[in-house]
Amino acid sequence: MLDINRDLSLLDAYSQAVVSAVERIGPSVVQVEALHRGDRRGRESPRGTGSGVIFTPDGLILTNSHVIARAAQITVGFADRRTLTADLVGDDPDTDLAVIKVSAPDLIAAQLGDSRALHQGQIVIAIGNPLGFQQTVTAGVVSAIGRTMRARSGRLIENVIQTDAALNPGNSGGALVTTAAQVVGIPTAIVPGGHGISFAVPINTARLILPALLSSGRVRRARLGLAGQDIPLSRRVTRFYRLASDNGVLIVRVEPDGAAAAAGFLDGDIIVELGGQIVTGVDDLHRLLTEERIDRAVPITLLRGTERMTVDVVPRG
Figure 1: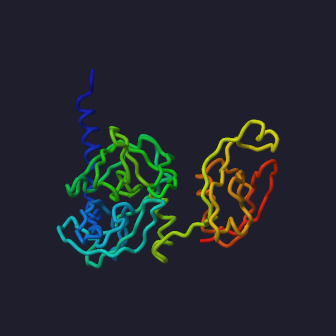
Figure 2: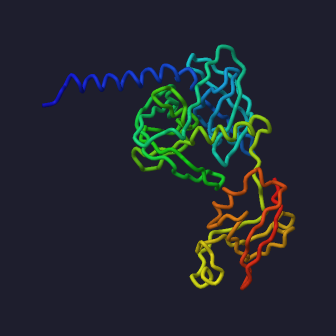
Figure 3: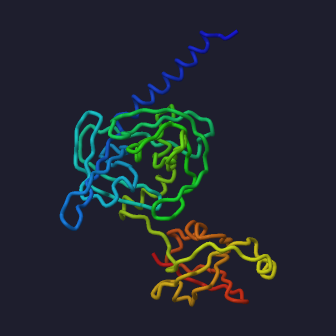
């Protein structure tokens, strides 16, 4: 026999957890509106809307890069119905994160959590401004952790959080929080046509890039100065060179003044290792070419025709 009282008690506990978290995080979630630059005829482009999370009492707000991309003016709407103009502090399209700033008193900063501590099945709450409806709350669970998602820049965002908390256009840049009201993710994408499949950039990714965004407005990453594409390697080639992977990166274009050109790279070369680590595709190059490698020589192993060679390259910023 069902224990109705027990079931009601559990539902009430769940409701109270969500209500408590929303009451704490709600004042820190704002609506972000970006007025895009007009076209060549001087006409005003449509406005883009999204959400943001206040993370410092002096007005720093975390949002998505795609929310404020190409904005000529950014305005922020608060839960108390104030509307202020914001300045862009930093933008990183490769992680789809950006920081904007407003000047206002009595701001309440959200508490940032630890996305590494999330567990599959854990309850999470999303709050944002979908389709212009301010302070909209949805709840669900962490469907999966450790997903990857491609940013609009083409790079992969790693450790993305998948959730079934309902998200819609306008939730982007808002808050994905635990029942303890700690921000663990920034909602960034939905799967068109999918039901209950949404993604958030982990807050730990934001923690990593925030110092760079606040100090210089961007995240510097090492660059080789080449264009490449993933390529499978034949079994004969992998056996002959005793390669650990049967994939690599085919160089299709070497920029004349880039680091790769200075090191003697040629169109048609195939990259199989960087810094002693296996390269199976372009995404591996992106992951390995961190800021720490800028202006520091790194060995890159190439296949050129029937020859295998290792060349020292000095990536640039």
